[in-house]
Length: 168
Image 1: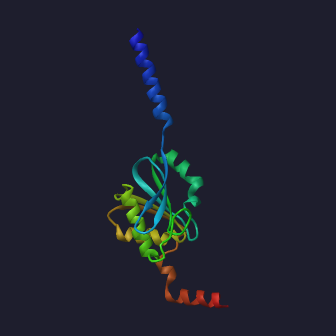
Image 2: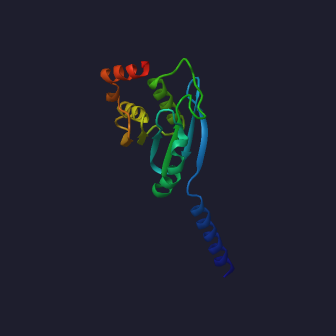
Image 3: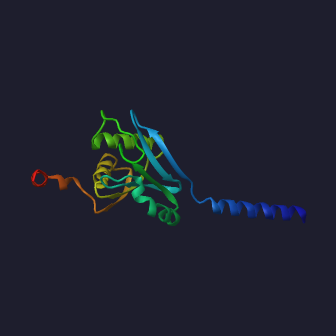
């Protein structure tokens, strides 16, 4: 009787502990070669989802929806600060979208997320998401682009008109 009672309490404890530890949140800076990118990760299972913020934003733009998405999907969620934003540092010798993408790829690989991925991007983050997808078509399983900027947005006539507005 005593042994079965002990086993019962151990099982209850295991169920309680495993049920209360749904996800682990990690905030980390990763050296990507001359500068560090800040990653906010909610660990889970399955194909991870990478969130790309819009221009001028950092990972905190996603803070209000990551936890509810994690609760529903139970998958790994990754948000990060692009170089020079939020907690990420900046290397003046390595700037631009391609160098930013190389930094992201390096950071994801160092964190163990070099495989399949789902992308969610907003605004200017759409440029980064589509570039990532074009560089890794076999790994990107889906993409959600929310009011995203795409490369065709920056065609020549649009750039000239924008510059005229800036110049006044």
